[in-house]
Image (cartoon, rainbow, N blue to C red; front, side, top):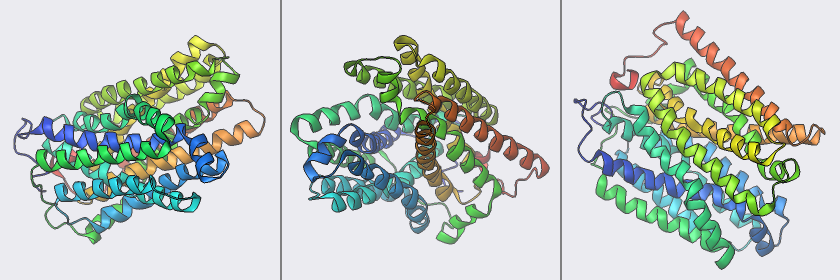
Length: 408
């Protein structure tokens, strides 16, 4: 493997903290750009002359960009030096957000949000590989968690700031803000990252080898199904809080901030646990998710317990760094594609959870039914996890070559 993935010492590579900070700022930009639109749909709808549900299509357009862009860009740019690739991806993201701020109408805005989503998954996948490669031995998941802290931290800091800008200066100002953060990230990446080469022998064909590995697909299945439970609840958390718990509208932002706090804490704790015991952490967090989501259906009837439950639902994001490391372990030499696909899987989880939650509500099962839907998805993800373990035990080599620290 290249020096980017196998440093010779257990000590962190020189400039590790600066590099992780730069990578995290890029994640902060992407997280802010992804989530801020959800709070500005009424303003967007009024400005471009559509209904709020139609304006919501821009969220789906961005998610579709993530799902498609992650594998396509990861394969096409397999041989790029990693610093250059990260800066290029952030440049595309910045340009997409600046252009979104200038979109004249519904169709153009959807196309530009799709384009903005294209670099999302590949950026996080490559950033995770770089952070893990620069980290001390035994701290790969913690390094990935620090990068992901930018994404989760955006829900606490970046999104509220961008939403405030959007409400006071128009929704277009929010996208300009996101674009400026992305430009800052580009400058920081250029300054903080060493000129890391791609893996020796990297090519699109070698990356595509990841798609032949059963454990890669099973790990992606855990993410796409098991992680969907969080989105089943969160997609409908506002009406659940107001209609079931009786929370005033003025209190919704505070509870949503608790969700963000849960994401930040869960991300950090989950990364530390994954460094200590990767597979038990994945299995344990799926069980935790099922319990938390099941509990939400009961807790949602009272304001205080609902707020605490929303905080706990946010902690489910703890599984993210663990699954990222698992993909790096089972991907062999096809590291970039596998790492990027993790974020395609998470966006599929978003779509699946929101859809099934909506099905339950439409069927007349009530707002709190999303908790039961989420718990079932977590248990289904646990089933895929058990399948993965059983399959690996039947074939101990997993069909994968030794990959140095990536397989430790």
